[in-house]
Image (cartoon, rainbow, N blue to C red):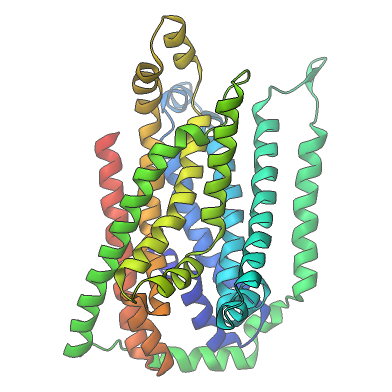
Amino acid sequence: MAVPRGLHEAVWGLLLVNVLGLDPWVGVLAIAVPCGAVTAKVFADLVDEVPRGGYEALLAAGAGRGTAALYGLLPPAAGALLAYAFYRLECAVRSAVVLGLIGAGGLGYQLSLSFSSLRWDQVWSCVYALTAVCVAAVVAGRAVRRRLADPPAVRGDRLRRDGALTAAAAAVLALVAWSWWYLALSPAALTSERARRQAAYVLDHAWPPQVSGPLLRSLGSAALATVQMSVIAIAFATVGAVLLSGPAAHPARGCGPVRWGTGVAVRCALLLLRAVPPPVWALALLFVLRPGILPGALALGVYTLGVLGRLSAEALEELDERPTRALTVLGASASGTWLYAVAPRAVGPVLAYALYRWEVAIRDTVLVGLLSAGGLGALLATSLQTFDWSAVTTTLVVLVLLTLAVDLVSDRARQVVR
């Protein structure tokens, strides 16, 4: 999974447009391929964090591994998995905007036109429209999670079907069918004569990779800048997320108006931060700062703060409240309750999200690099503009290796914490 998720959606789009042309499949596949690989990794990490007691008890009782996983691992992880699935819907919306910035249409294309003409009123109108779409995804995801969290109603000796959840599932299927029809997706376009000819041309010129001395030296310097940019971004975002996740988490019933108002304000701020894609933050910061690593790192850090803040808050919401209530009843202070009942159980999921976002930041550095923020993205942009496919291959290999290295480091860090 490191190979497909190691390349950003914009890179997949630039590669696929050379094979499929201006076909709607370009945008769909450019989002689906890396999104599917990233989701698979995070789902695996979340299931890894589930206590193994129920799973091992089912195995000892004679259940098969599939059955034991279905009943012993998935139910405890269901809330986190569903929360992340709806978060990926938000990501898909932002990815569509990013692809629009490179000419794929939609809000991103309108945003690019407004930026180029310095029409800041139109820029903010596009940002507000994008925020409204993200709000709709957040509200829908939270409503479904709440329905799943409630105990099922029982009629006699049979469970009663939840009408709202059934309607939500039907709405998802209808939305997929409508989107397929609206985009006029045709499977024949993937196997057309032109697509096969263009794919053969790109592959023929992309192999073998270029390994000349000047290119390798440039790649080494660009890779170092990419890592530096991602480390600054993830450090800034992780510290901010840890500080804001508590206020951003939905409070228990009966909280005061100050706590409620603070939570709403923090959640709205995090939503605005993550609703604006990194290229838009980078374009805004490049107007203030000189081109280089700093504006790219700040753009990634601000965006990642919005993402990590939401994921960390939802990780806190998924924790069992009984230890917290028990310590509160025994007279523990709010800080003591947080240190002994919340922090030890939240460190695993929050660390998993932070390390995953570091990997995503590595990929996103390519995107801001395409906008002259430095790193591997700037080198990749030059190679694509000159149709130097062998140099493109070498650059992509270095990017995938960086992603794999971060993946190995994150796995080791999670094992140490666990």
